[in-house]
Amino acid sequence: MSLERVMVFFKRRWRALALFLAVLGPGIITSIMDNDAPGITTYSVCGANYGYRMLWILVVSVIPLIIIQEMCIRMGIVTGKGLGDLIREKYGVKVTFFVLLPLLVANLGTTMAEFAGVAASCQILGISKYIAVPVTAFLVWWLVLKASYKQVERVFLFGCVVYFSYFASVIMARPDWGEVGRSFIHPSFEMNPGFIAMAITVIGTTIAPWMLFYIQASVVEKGLQKHELTLSRLDMIVGSFLLLIFAVSVIVACGAVLYPNGIRVETAKEAAIALRPLAGKYASLLFALGLLNSSVFAASILPVSTSYVTCESLGFEAGIDQTYKEAPVFYLLYAMLIILGSGLVLIPGLNLITVMLASQTLCGILLPFILFYILKLCNDKRLMGEYTNSKAFNIISWITIVIIMALTAYLVLDGLRSLI
Image 1 (spheres, rainbow, N blue to C red):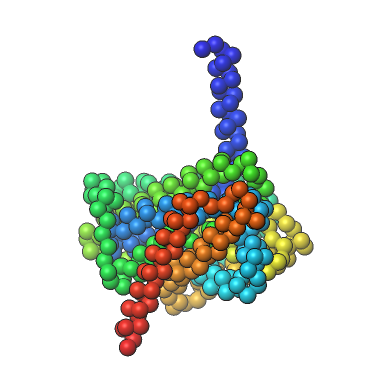
Image 2 (tube, rainbow, N blue to C red; image 1 turned 30 degrees about the vertical axis):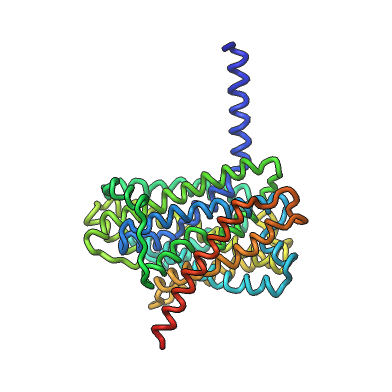
């Protein structure tokens, strides 16, 4: 091979890498930040209380996660509009309101959970929550208020690197990797309310409704075009697999150390503390640092996502690149969510575990309804043109809807039976 051909080869590779880096952000940030405080709590409780038995549910959930996020990316690039905006334009304000209201409730609960994660992780590190929570609230508010979209995106991408602390935690836990592998190959399922509620919560955590609105709004604000769709998909797929790896790491770490010893936990904080005498203080410290990182960055993203969808749905200007004068409702709502989310966490005696897990269960219940409208929009030829869904995408999406609704119906009926 001549020197000229070698130079051409590397030039093409560098050009491809440069193009990928240009679109990098929305997919990886959205997926990795989904491993937030309630997510880490859910996976910790799952591993401690059920061992490896739910790992297969996590893996199976990633398939619809990739497909659903791809639909949102495609809609955002093709239409140049966010999901809330499209639902309002296509189905009216009433439908949008009934989708928006439970989403706001779930997102407020999840925002509280993020600040609860900040409080819990800082307490492990010896910092009072009455200092850590207000300081974090101010920093995340200041970041979005003062920085541009590109600057915020760079900060979030840097935060993604800290998630690798969970890899170290799971290595220190020394799990039986053969048993971990068998749990993927031989799935187990229990027809009891506790197992089903946890399954719905795991699904609701992995495929969170807020992330679907956020990823579509991100590609719109980033200004991605149709010719960048393939690279945007790659960005999202990489993020989805990183989400899976980090989530599996948390479940395996707790399943390897806490489950065999019969130690049941209710929070990620309890999991981190319980790991200390069994897996070593460094495993506990790394687990706590991972929880702090995920809580801080998710506390930034979730209020942004909620502000996006609310403003889009109601027809107000929205966007990090907008000034306060251009998008006052967006910034006021963002500030209100941070103030409420951080302030309520500081109330003595508030049961944050219930808030945290209930918000994720509500996300799981809400998901089929949001997915229904995503499917309707993605199959609208007048809206999407040649970019409508394939049959395979539609089939997998409908299967996801049916499974979640069936599990939810069982849980509701069992609850009603216990009341009669």
